[in-house]
Length: 65
Image (cartoon, rainbow, N blue to C red; front, side):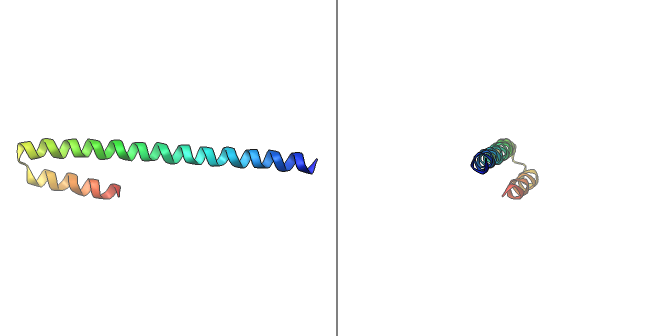
């Protein structure tokens, strides 16, 4: 009986770790998407030659670090 409980607890722990990893992966995907969006905005501002706006976007990128 103890062995069965131990195995169930191990399975639960494994599931918890998988869920944590999925959550981390999703957060990383969100950060990557946000960085890509900001980079695109910076490139557009570079084309339009708007240094103040570029600086603001770079600061936003830095906050993602």
